[in-house]
Image (cartoon, rainbow, N blue to C red; front, side, top):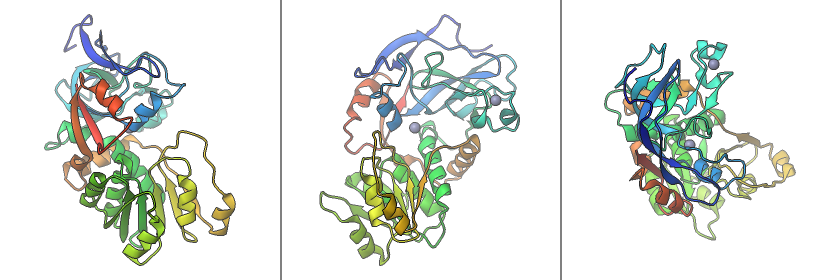
Length: 348
Ligand SMILES: [Zn+2]
Ligand SMILES: [Zn+2]
């Protein structure tokens, strides 16, 4: 065994309960069990889903969130053969069993006994100095990729999944609504997969500027009375063949349906946190495909890490702010009313 002794403590930002800010606490440094590694967290992205979870009733109390992270292996549990202390890794926030068919096929994200660490009072995510993952649940970081960029991998994986489900082709004329982290990664993948038009609609000009850097061919700065469909057609001379809804506000799905042309696709990646409604008849009459996207695998992580290392896709433009663990509770509250933040990185 390497690293710290069991009785040692670390700093962690703990979610106490709904309605209270995260609390910086001294907690025990987690110990890696058989087949597990302990990661010294160097960078962790603050995710919108953590903000939503902090306002939801289902979220367990006294947990350490944080699932978008990178760091180095600090200690290895019994039987670990893949890693040595000091190895730089991008882990998934999970502990896989290492024994089931999925794990044996090196697809630990489909593990039958998968345990997530970040919404789990028995383990803990990466808003902390240390966290534990299974040895199969980490990807080696290439030279030249820094921890902050690597920590932005998760939104890239979500965007890749959405882009793949959309089956983007060179003929596609794409409208992306919303330029938060997911809208921006979708934009980047749309360019990567060679779409004809990539038009991003968003309220915040700073975010639109990043969208341009990441591959948007045009941008629509949305105000109260912007008609996005008309603006799109004025910019491209066409109607969109594919719309990504990356806002997640009530009514957005119906707005996309209204904008869509016959036989087009709408991919929903924005997570609306309440009941929402839309007219099925409108979808039928236009023969629309509504596609809901979610999920990624460790293969996706490995693929993205490779592309990031080769600079074929970029994570740095997504990072707008960097804060310490001590600053995280206040920043987390500030993100409830976002201004021009995109991805905030915590450096524990
Ligand atoms: Zn996330
Ligand atoms: Zn397994």
